[in-house]
Length: 248
Image (tube, rainbow, N blue to C red):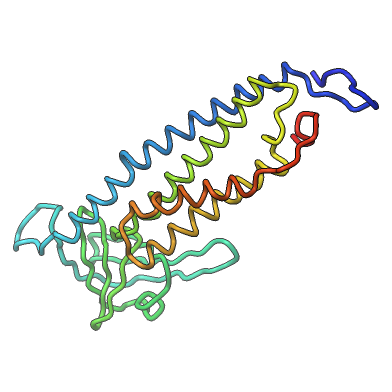
C-alpha cells in the first residue's frame, strides 16, 4: 500500500492508494456540492420567506385561532437562567400562564430584558406560528431565539463555503486520478490547508459584514468568488518537487 522505495531510499506513494484517495475526495466534493445546492435552493429562500411573512404579520383579531398573525399573551416569570462559560452560553427564561401552561423561552444574549427579569415579574409575550418571538416588560423588548431574522447573507456565506470545499476536493481528487504518482502541489500540506483556511476567511469575512451592513445576500458570492479565485492563484506554490507533492 505504501509503494516501493525510490531514489535515495525515499518511499514513493502507491498509485493505487493515490487513486483511492482521489475517488474519496471526489465523493466528498459531490456531497459538499449537494449541501451547497440545498443552501441556495431551499435554506436561503425558506429563511427569506419566513422573515418576510413575519414582518408582514398583523395582530390577531379577538378570538382568532390562526397562527400566522401576532398574538399577545400575559405571562409570569418563574425563573431565569444566564450562564456563560467558555464556548457554551445559556440564556433562557421559564414562563407560566396561570396554572394552565409553563414553558421555556431561549434567547441569544442576556440583554436588554432578560438580565433584569426576576421570578414573579409580569411580562408580555408576542407569539407567531406557535412560537414566542418577543418578550416585553415596561416598554423594554427583546427578541427570542425563535424570532425570524434578516440574516440570509450568512446562509449565502455557508453555501459558498460548501461550493469552495467541493471545488477544492474535486480538483485534488481529479489530479490524483489523472496523475497518481505526481500530484503536487495538490496536497494538504501546504496548499490544501491554506486553501481551506482562505475559504473560511473569505466566507465569514464577507458574510458577517454583509449582515451588519444589511446589503443584499447576492453580494456575498459576488464578492467572495473573485476573492477566493485570487487567493487560490496567489497561494499556488511556484516551485514543486518531482515527487508526489512532499505532503499528504
